[in-house]
Image (cartoon, rainbow over all chains, first blue to last red; front, side):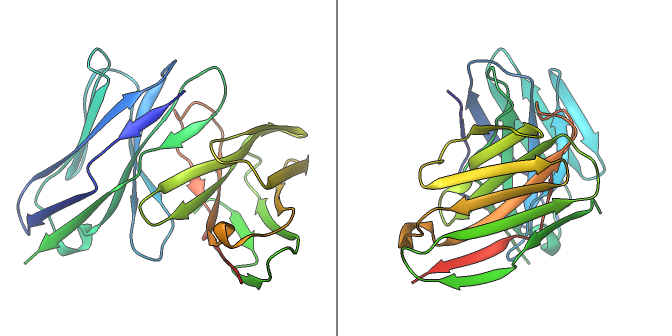
Length: 110
Length: 114
């Protein structure tokens, strides 16, 4: 089976850096994705790591370590609009299931 | 934005009635997914499809069935709705079944079972 664990809530100050962790357990693994969801909206894709290491997209970076079954999303220069829920997701057992973590709610304070 | 439409957007129904939610895409993507979202549970996979007439169960499939008779449409049916199925339902599409390509989500269907 598959499971992904992430913290339920994180609070940070505007302009700061925050890291959201995700640990996963899967019988097979292709890569780790991250999605953002604002209240009342649909999830939107942020990043994907298929290989170990850091992927950078503007203020957002994502990291993967396959040996540790661990990844994180790093948000820099936090803005108020970054207040949202963030989900890690993975596919990978013998099927085409794409499973999500339970989400981390990020609150950015002034 | 990816062409994906869910209908209806909102529905209120009574316990014991059948309900069908529709997901329609114009992207010709092979993979389609139904998720439900509830507070504290994130997005949970109900069923998914990897081609026309090819479907499989997800994490929380009991009480749900799906059909995909053509590439563009993926239907989710609640055979006999229960209050525990009150939720927000999201459809998603992708051209990859392994997560290597992004999932594109519809705007969701808010279902209330009274």
